[in-house]
Image 1 (cartoon, rainbow, N blue to C red):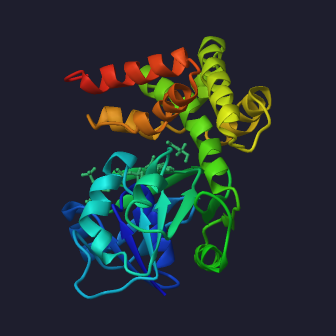
Image 2 (image 1 turned 180 degrees about the horizontal axis):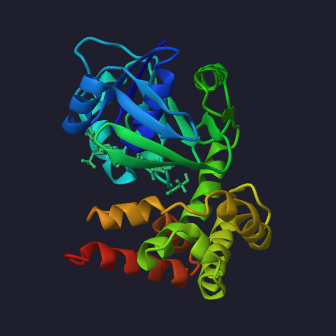
Length: 305
Ligand SMILES: NC(=O)C1=CN([C@@H]2O[C@H](COP(=O)(O)OP(=O)(O)OC[C@H]3O[C@@H](n4cnc5c(N)ncnc54)[C@H](OP(=O)(O)O)[C@@H]3O)[C@@H](O)[C@H]2O)C=CC1
Ligand SMILES: CC(C)(CO)C(=O)C(=O)O
């Protein structure tokens, strides 16, 4: 089995490292990581174990190589550029988006009809070039044919991930699961980024009042679109968020917070922006999500923030 990981960063390098125990993996990553990993290996620490993995990394795919599966693990804002750069190498591979937010699979579907969606709710944090720490995990990763269904190819990659030690399941409603994860990210990531706090601080009564509004709006638009994110209503999701997801990832600083701290653009358009987009489509007002999107974009544009 031959696998490529494109846009390999904190998530992609750890998945590539784990998979390198059971198959051939090539990771396309930035030069600084490729140099570090080709010299000393990927140094992974944390809840997936402390291991050093050796697998080839470069800024491009090796000429002539074919792949059975290609993971895209860049930030969502880079998905289209990655497809433009590498779609001539997709061949017969299934292309798996292992990213947060809504819209990546639709972008990839513009380049291949073999799209697998994947949702992962594990935390990965940089510890230097070629060094990543796996911090928290709230549930198994879920993979499914996008937008729905599973098949033999999905089952094969799920088994491969499992055999590498990654907790993964096949999912016949992956679009719903991606929305389920987007509920979590839309509730926690922007507030965590603006307030510069780990998730546990968002249990504060005032913060949770804002979260309730974000989630209520999301359920209104999801109902209209006919998407089942895994919870019947906003109340049952908010209970799960408060009692399970926040405690399980309490000390994590959201990836959006990390992006803002590093002066990078965030994935806000793919998270709360996806809720406002659906609202616009169905003529449902989503004022709290719209405000959150504006707030994060304001924060992104602040120089020396
Ligand atoms: N980190 C986490 O805990 C989790 C993240 N996710 C999601 O997974 C996805 C990936 O996140 P994460 O790993 O943290 O992101 P990272 O930014 O750490 O990794 C993406 C990497 O891809 C690189 N990249 C982008 N375009 C190219 C290219 N054309 N060629 C080579 N390298 C490229 C980026 O470089 P550069 O920055 O220089 O552009 C970056 O190093 C996101 O959607 C995120 O929301 C999901 C669950 C948990
Ligand atoms: C909490 C985490 C790491 C869970 O996957 C996440 O989605 C994020 O930081 O954006």
